[in-house]
Image 1 (cartoon, rainbow, N blue to C red):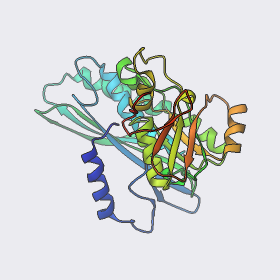
Image 2 (image 1 turned 135 degrees about the vertical axis):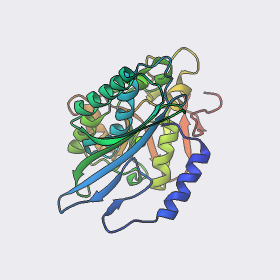
Image 3 (image 1 turned 180 degrees about the vertical axis):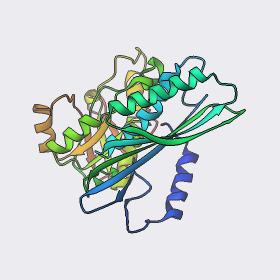
Amino acid sequence: MTHTSGEFELIDWIRQRAGRGGANVAIGIGDDAAALSIGDDEELLVATDTLLEGVHFDRSTALPREIGRKAAAVNVSDLAAMAARPIAVVCGLTLTKGLAGEFVRELMAGMIQLAESQGASLVGGDVTSWDGPLAVNVTAVGVCPKGKAVRRSGAHPGDAILVTGPLGGSLGSGRHYWFQPRVTEALALVEAADVHAMIDLSDGLAADLGHVCDESGCGATLVAEGIPIHEDVGDADRLSHALGDGEDFELLFTVDPADAERLLADPPAGLTLFRVGETTDEPGLRIIDANGNSKPLDRLGWSHDL
Ligand SMILES: [Mg+2]
């Protein structure tokens, strides 16, 4: 979910402090999930995320079932971004004292339902309470064949950049509570093509593409006319919303241009794909507007004169 720049600095510090990790760490800090070697054939993927009352949900408007569902879904989405199959979730629940039992039961029912719909079981957790706001942490665990987790760092200059659905307007419409994590889609994609890099769109198209470029050591050029804008977006600044709103939880991935042509011509079952641009040798993000002019794009998704 959307981060502040201070949070990114802290994550960088923690990443350096933690180092490369032990022999079992195939992928450490810096991707959508960590990957741990657990045998000759498979890796275990682990992702965690916390939803805070007043930041990620509003208890006066969101249903408890929606809060629980979202807490599981954002983590399962991170597993999808690695092309992992979810198997389990663990929940850390920090309750506000006096919260009705029915509210908590509904919240957990939403979480369990989402997890089970994606093939994962709730297998444990922790419940505490205090006078502060409600906080819901979920850790999701998945598996994938050894060495096959798709990283943010695998993009090559000249790759085609694709997304799995229309973008923007998720927070305003409430779609961020009800989005479908793209697990099936991710597994179908890696069957169908050599996916070089992948991320789920939580921070926004521009910001998340920026993460892929940072990790891959490349830049990217988006083509405004190729970016699918969600029907939830209103009439004003439509492109900026698609670039910057975040919490769409579609997948962004890069493949060889020839693979992109093939996937777009004959998408794997159930997938809707859009080609939004290409990665470049030149660092930084740019966008080509409707008149064919290339302009710098900032990570918040705003570019002058679009
Ligand atoms: Mg993610």
